[in-house]
Image (cartoon, rainbow, N blue to C red; front, side, top):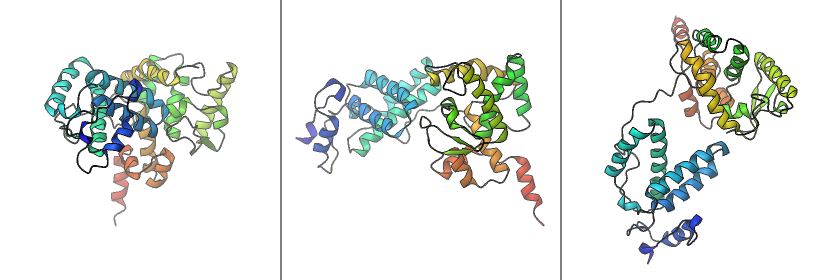
Length: 321
C-alpha cells in the first residue's frame, strides 16, 4: 500500500528515498497519509538537492544544518510537526543561539517542508508564514564616498603599522565587486592588466571582470608578496588551509574592529560589493551591465544590491527644463 511506505535514510542503509517516492508518486493524492516518511529522510534529500545547485563553499553549512535537524526531529513523521511546535522551538532556540543562526536553521526546515509539498507528502507546517518573528536584520548597507575616509581612519587607528596593506584588500573589492570567496581563490594566472578571470571555486566562476587600474596596482603588490613566500594564492598568501574559514576569522579580527573604530554602522564585508554596484549605477552604468559584472542571474537580484545616492537623484531633477 502506498500510504504505508516506511523509509530509512540512505546513510543508514535500507530503501532509497528516491525509489520509494517514485513508487508512491503514481498516486495523485498525498503520498504520506500515514506520516511514515520521517523528517530525517526529507532532510537528507533536501540537503542533496541544495548541494547539487550551490557552490562548494556553502556545502559544509548545508551539511551542518541537515545534521542538526536529523538529530533534533529526524525520527518523527512529518505530519506530527505543527506550526505551534516550530514557534516554541524558535522561541527557545533564540535564547541559546544568535538570531542569524536560528534564521538559517528555520530556513532549512522550511526547505524540507517545501520538498515535502513538492512531492505531495502530507504535513501541517505552513512554509510561507510560520508565525516566528525576528528582529529586522540590517543586511543591506553601503559605503558612500563620504564615509570611506572614516573607514580608512578606522584602519589607521586599529592597524597603525599595516593599515595600507590591509585596506588594499577592501579597496580591491570596491574596485572589482568580487565576493570574498572569489577574492580568496585568485591566483596570479587569473589576473592581468585588462581582466580578472574569476576562478571556478567562486560562486559564478568563469566570468570576466574588467580590471581597474588601481585594482591592478593592488594585485601586483600582492602577487609580489605571494611569490616571496612561494604561495599559489594572491590575496592572504600565507594562509594555505581552510581559507574560507580564515576569511571569517579575518573579518572578526581586522574588518569589524576597523569598522567599529570608524564610528560607522556595522558594515559587513559583503557591503563593499553592494557599494561597488551602487557606485556603478551612480555613474550611469546600465543595470544589465552591473548584473553581468556581479555575476547575478537576474536583474531583480542586482537591484537589491543597489542604492541610488541623493546626489544622483538631485542631478536627475535638475535635468527638468
